Length: 167
Length: 167
Length: 167
Picture 1 (tube, one colour):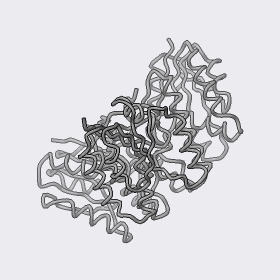
Picture 2 (picture 1 turned 90 degrees about the vertical axis):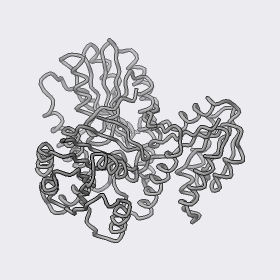
Picture 3 (picture 1 turned 45 degrees about the vertical axis):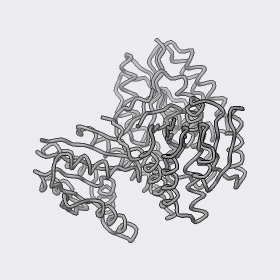
Picture 4 (picture 1 turned 45 degrees about the horizontal axis):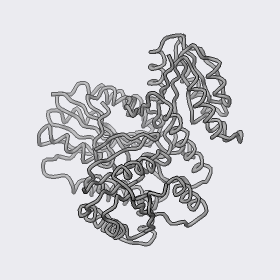
């Protein structure tokens, strides 16, 4: 059964735990699609911490750029994508057209036969950042979240580890 | 019928689209009250993009400072104010008393005979900014949102393009 | 009756007013447990403004570091803790183990016979901060909020002065 869930929220709001629980609720084994790249020690530590929490029900796939292909290749199992804002960062650093890639993503989501749960970040509820790149990034993240929310069956805002139903 | 709606949320959370739909739901033609000033190219581009999305049902009025007067002058049509945080920025740059102006605004809203939908921004859910002006601005924005929410019939938090009912 | 409420939200979102109303709803006199330290004029002014709004139903206790002890010592009256993120700041500045202190806090909350309402801040919905300390702080604040939310009977997100029920 096709079912798409977007879990969004602030940093350390418990998004990943909520998303993992929802993904395994569709059955196991599940596929964890990591978009993170361990570019520095801080990020490597975060990735390791996330992996340690996940159990043997998970098969992990790493795909920093071609997320639609990774989703298509793992159809048949419940998928967890963690996370869209890191994917967006990777696309922007690689100077890809993130808008076109987002369209590919939503088109791919519409063609799945198994569920996909996507984690994203809310980054636009602070003061306007000083530098133009950060402003472009938060604009892009907000638009990407809107596009994915449009095709999602459920949208959840994580607050203090709890799911708040938005759609 | 008097009806006041506050649509708040992060940047690129779909606030304007939600607010436009709600405004036109009250009937057309509607009045778009823009508080934006095209002070630089980035802002001019954003204004143009917003205008391009709106259709011929809209009459546009530009008023960076005297928002209560612009609202009073357009009574009889549904109004969309986009947005309160830019208005606050303009007031602070012009060294006006934003607290007194907010009181004028809420008093004006109470006297309208046609609906007013107001867009605002949530700017206080990030880390404390380094500079004192940014801290004063986010304090003021939060207090203004509270004041307008108090007199509003509906308050909506936009999340990923979706309306979350707060009041 | 033991009852724990977490009121979280952005800066100037009306958290304190909501929390005060909920605390007094359990009866008076109530105990206000302030974690703030008046380290500079801006903070002193903020503390004074908060105190001025509270009435004679409140007994004020100031405890920047040993919050669990202050809660235990005031059992029998409704308590308001304002706020957890300032407590976290104090713990980090004093180089205490905030994770161990959070465990002491949640264990203490579980042993109370009278209600406790705790105010916290959402600080993780903006752009990733440039400096590592700010990133550590927002990670810690998010995790602390999750831990307290887990043991809370109610969790409220304050938006524009209005309570949004999360749990």
